[in-house]
Length: 101
Image 1 (cartoon, rainbow, N blue to C red):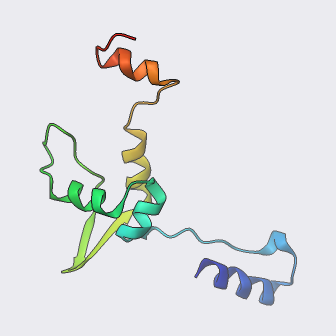
Image 2 (image 1 turned 30 degrees about the horizontal axis):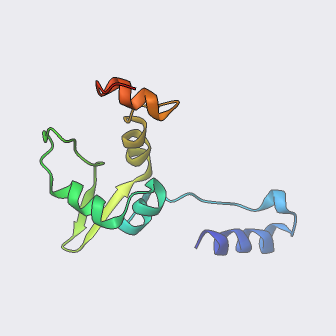
């Protein structure tokens, strides 16, 4: 869809590539969220079933817009991914978990 919008913009504004428009969607479905985050669809579905105070952690916020349709805001996915600690190496993760390196 975004490429169609860019093609329309090129047709109406000329063919220069600097005039093309890319609109980033505000929200995505479960499969789009899986592609965006790198997690599987089944993992995101499992996270939705967890309680918000689950000691293993909760998934990203979502909106149920119909009985079988769930949407994730891109900003919420970014915030959820940013909540994970960043590591420089696998030994950083081992030391923070109390494992000998």
